[in-house]
Amino acid sequence: DHVDLICPDEQVRVGETLMILVNDVRKSDGSSALGSFAAADVNLVSVAPGFIGSVRLVDHTLFAEAVVSKPGSWNYASTVFGKKVDGNCTVNIISNSANADKSVIWCGQATTVVGEPLSCTFEARDKFGNVVTSVSPQPSQFMLINELQSTIPSSRVEVSAPADKGKFEVIFEDTWLSGEYTVQG
Image (cartoon, rainbow, N blue to C red; front, side, top):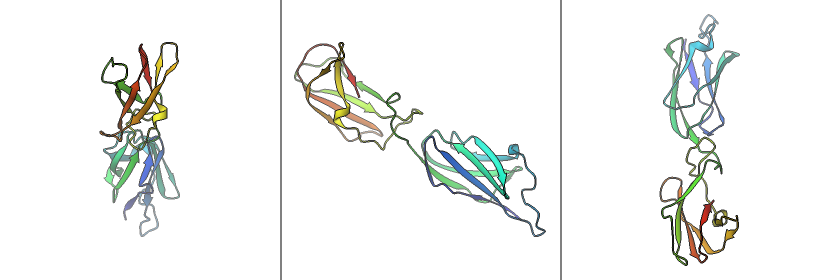
């Protein structure tokens, strides 16, 4: 008699629910290998943060649900009544879509000369603050805004491919008006 860990999800997005199943294999006498249990008897052993959720038993299968908040590739196992369950699982947690409130943009220089390009860095982040690598920001998303909330004309805005994980270089070419402006993306 043994208990098996079943891995129904190989990939989920940050903020989604991960399902983990522990299948109860019946003993030769027909009784349950799990027997009666309490949620406290089940422990999901993992290197992944955010694997906290509910555990319930339905038709001889333990269902554990967890909302994950960090991206990465995680390997997890389970114990029931302190005994390790057969098998372990690997799940890939991928970043969710970018969140405007959590994403950041900054410029390496505080001033630039009229007609010279202004270089800034944009980092897309999801609602949990994780870097999102699956976005492709468009030049039309970025602008320079003056203190009157007017957009400064720029002949070109270029967005480079990410040089570093999730970081894009945003270049405002040929800025031709002087004054103080805020970079917005």
